[in-house]
Amino acid sequence: MSERAPICFYYGNGKLVDLAEYPRVVLQPDFYNAEEIAFLKAKGVHVLAYLTLSEDTGPPADWQRTEVNPDWGGKFVHVGHPDWVSHVVGQARDALAAGFDGLFLDTLNVELTFPEDVPHLLTLVAALRAEAGSAYILANRGFGMLPRLAELVDGVVFESFSARWTDEGYAAWPADTLEFHAQIAEQLLRLQLDLYALDYADDPGLTDFAIRRARQFGMQCIVSDRALSRV
Image 1 (cartoon, rainbow, N blue to C red):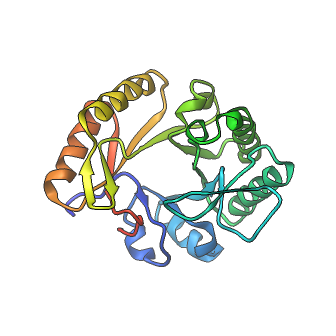
Image 2: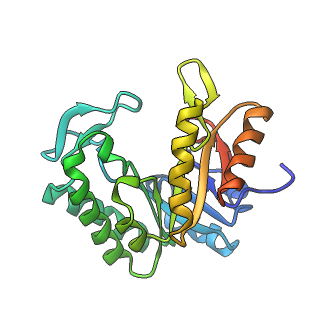
């Protein structure tokens, strides 16, 4: 790469030297200790901790629903369950105490699975903002919570804005989906947030398409693989 992307989403471990080349990185907090985080921060990297807000891959717990995410295998949760709220806020507290500069909030699309949980999810995001104080918070999608979400976070990632992964490989979205995503992107532009597109591609043509299209809507684009294993 001749020019580093503005942010790296990396869900593996290690790769500290490579990660140090980015202005901002999103990492799984369980994979990095305080010394490793301090190393990245000393290199000028802004380090965000990944949090999942509506799915749980941990052991059985009272907050889990019976339904499973077919793509990743995690259990959907009752977002408003008090113990789940305490669990997630505790994860955020631990990450910030370990030296992370902020939080990346994932699995925010409950309007597509359990729309009754949207108010609970907003309450959880507000609790995380209260815990984080002025620390940076980046949200993945969460469009069902707009415009209120924009008052609680500093930036939004539009995951799979132009390109996606499928069972057959990587591909652009069909025209009607691209148009729908464009309408959402135009709403985001009015919210004065940091905007990123996170797309999935494995060839130069699809990669260029995603980058060019994101720029048209004021977003900085990051292209990775399904497992977010590229650095």
